[in-house]
Structure formats: C-alpha cells, structure tokens
Image 1: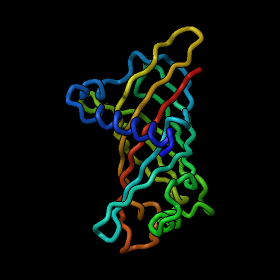
Image 2 (image 1 turned 180 degrees about the vertical axis):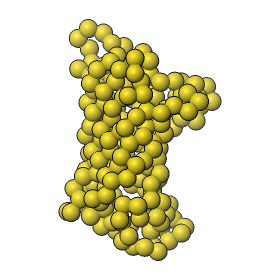
Image 3 (image 1 turned 30 degrees about the horizontal axis):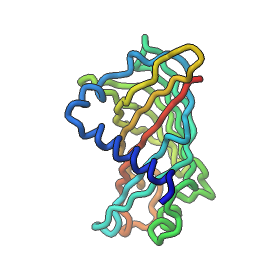
Image 4 (image 1 turned 90 degrees about the vertical axis):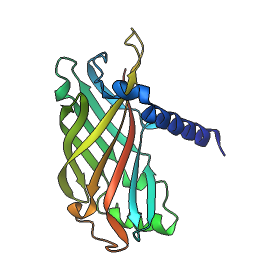
Length: 202
C-alpha cells in the first residue's frame, strides 16, 4: 500500500469521525463567517466525489471521481449569494476495470458527454444549516439539485499566505431524470452523491 493511499484513507477516517462526532454538530451548521471574502479555486489534490447506486436490488456499488475543477466566490456580507461551480471529468472514475465499473462508465457515456457540471444558484439556510441550490448538467440534461453542506474550517487570512476552506456534502439524484436508462432493471435509478472539496485563495 502506497503512502498516498494510506494518506487518503486516513483523511477519509478523520472526516468520518468529524461528521459523526456529537460535538461537531454546531460547527457543521455554522456558515463560515470568518472566511475571507474573494474568489477561490478548487484544489484538486484534496477534492473527490463519491457516487453510490444499487445493483440488482442487493449490492450497493460505489466509486470515486478524482478529477474535478471549479471555483467559489464568497462575500461574508451576503452569504446566501455565494457562487460555486464544479466540473467533473467522468473518465476520472477510479474503478474502470471491474464488470460493474465498466457498466457504470457506459451509463455515463463520457465519449458523448465528457463533463459533468454543477452551477449554484443560491445558498439557503434551514435551522442554520446551509444547502446549496443549483443546476446539474449530466448526460446532456440539466436539472435542479439541492446539496446538503457541512463546513470544516478555514486557515487564517494572513499576509502572503494562501487561505484554504473545506466543505463536505451529500445529494441524491435519479439517473432517469438525466436520460440515463442504460441497464434498466439491473442498476438502480437512485444515485447518492458524497463530496469533499477544498478551495484555496492565493
């Protein structure tokens, strides 16, 4: 096992501990009022997207996408107007050799649709918890989606240093809404999304 694999697994364990820790509920719910304003870019090294769907009604298949690009614009005076854009390369799916992995890639059809894009519309708060509302374009179809979010801190804004901020979140879509009817009856219609993103402002 390489050091990079160990580091990724350790990060995943630590994030899971944060998400389930009772003492972190308020920290997740709080919007980053201390975050410095400005335009941020996605750090691909610390960002990934995991998708999960049901196979044959019994097997929960999951895979990750590792090549994401995007930006985040933030104004503490207008937190609901934060703008987020994320683009995913479907060819960056990590599991492309297994039978299920090949079928999953076939569903996405990256030769015809080489990118998946999310563009936010607004940040909405319910009981202090932020949700990101926007449009997801996948397989040539654009649909509205809502993503739950959790904030995991930011580095201090100091002269000459990069400011970093981290979020995680979840969402749920139906692949039939995006015209992906391939393998109907074998693969479930519902797709669960989980993401970890890190933005940096230089």
